[in-house]
Image 1: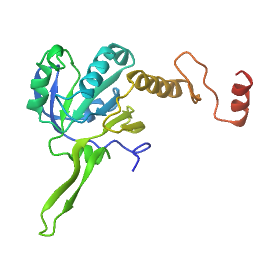
Image 2: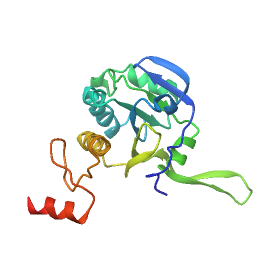
Image 3: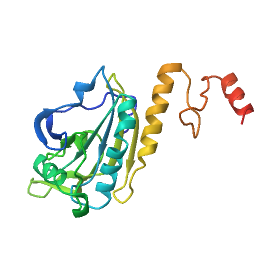
Image 4: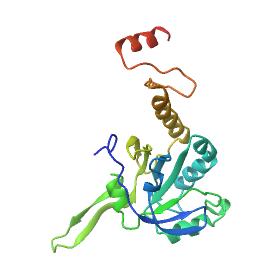
Amino acid sequence: MALVGKKAPFFKAAAVVNGNEIVDGFSLEQFIGEKDVVFFFYPLDFTFVCPTELLAFQNKIEEFEKRNVAVVGCSVDSQFSHWAWLQTELKNGGIKGVKYPIVSDLSKTISENYGVLAGTWDYDEDGNAIFEGAAVAYRGLFLIDKAGNVRHELINDLPLGRNVDEALRMVDALQHFEKYGEVCPANWSEGDKGMTASQEGVADYLSKL
């Protein structure tokens, strides 16, 4: 079920912040009224596509900060696994240098609440809970506004890495709409003109293509 237009599911969980500090009770609620949030999931620490994504977000972190956007990552690994990965050099498959928070979803409830868990819980014939499928998160990304509402979501299958520039473009589109009241047409990017949400606005925009 899509979360766009709904309140983001909040949580309290352990996380690693600033690349080296484990904190308990981390929550996205701290950003309400203060910042937009790009909250993204990845499958597992110490893997292959995942470090390229986490490092790509770090490489663009100043661009997100200029837009007053918090970037937060999450996977089903423990906070201790996150910490170890963050201490590992890039040449050894680590992500040392990543500073934004990385949340531990060891219980998999956060992934499940966001609809990105790659599998489902079921019961065997004896009534025991079993998990069917890969017990990791798909590559989900959610843009959450200052009111705590999900305004954009993207979910990729496990082999398909994301484009961080596209996440920035969606932030720009949201902030353009909030500032000017103009909607953003196909392939819009920062600096382009928006258009009014009316037949006249569409006609005017199309006439200039």
